[in-house]
Image (cartoon, rainbow, N blue to C red; front, side):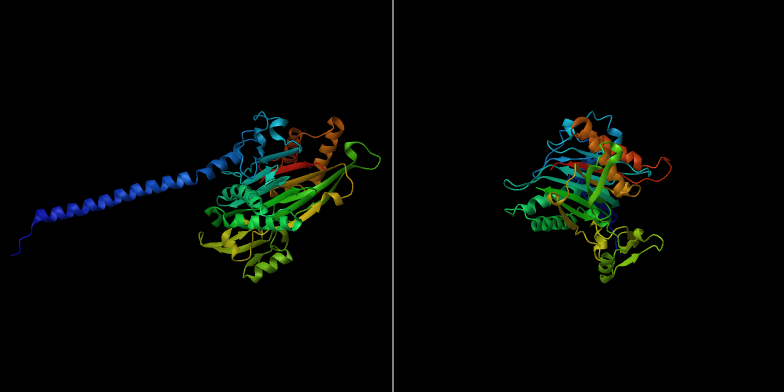
Length: 397
């Protein structure tokens, strides 16, 4: 009969159990370390996202090598922030930036906007200003939007630094590449989320408009009607506006179909067309309301691109007007108010301020922006309203 050493077996079992326990302990410790490293590595995204949502535009806003950004003030903070024109406005530019939350619960405002004056380019060159609206969507779209709001101007500054003279073609190519690079280098959230990008850049007398998605930017001229000199006779004319990139547009539809993508076009509402793609993370078909965007990586295979359409307007070639205004906003504004309505609103304000005070200050532009958002918000709070972010700049010739 074979004698079994019970104590030896117990020691072996105890030793094996100890090894399993140690492995689990080490695994737990490594998990804690990994989570800690991830927390530190992503802290800037969390912190910056919080800043973008809650912090008013005040002098201590930190600067970057490419410039010092201004961000929108939340509409509820306007009377709490204690800001004045000196802490908001630039030296030669009256501007206002205001954001407003959707009434969806629970909800995070996914809109991001940024204004830099100027953008610093290597050497002695600079770009007069950069204004951008980035409307996030999907899971953590606000993180993608916040990243794009800083990555696009940073890329633009870097790309322009290789040019001795910034020509229209150089600016156009740099803007296109800046969007593409921002998409390429976006945070991992871009797999399940993305954002629009609507940018206005001034260099000398030229304004460049770069747009991807359904946010919208425009340039309007303001003047008094012939023989008139009161607010009721202000003429606002849209000189240029970007388009909303929708999949039903012929060029967009063709590109998406050529890459095997599918487009859903509601018969009664073709402008509400959507790109359809299978998203592996969600393991189902998902639709996207635009044909161009930053992020949304899984839609790239079916034709959604981050490359913006870029156009240039030379202020020297526009007929004489009293003033000009640039407006850029997320689709929350444009879903309820037309570009013509917004242009008229700001032109009325600017010419009235010029009559009364000789100029429009940034604090007055902020108030005009707040009023526009109020006019775009449904009076019945039970009706759905999207996030709304609006920026406006009075152009000095």
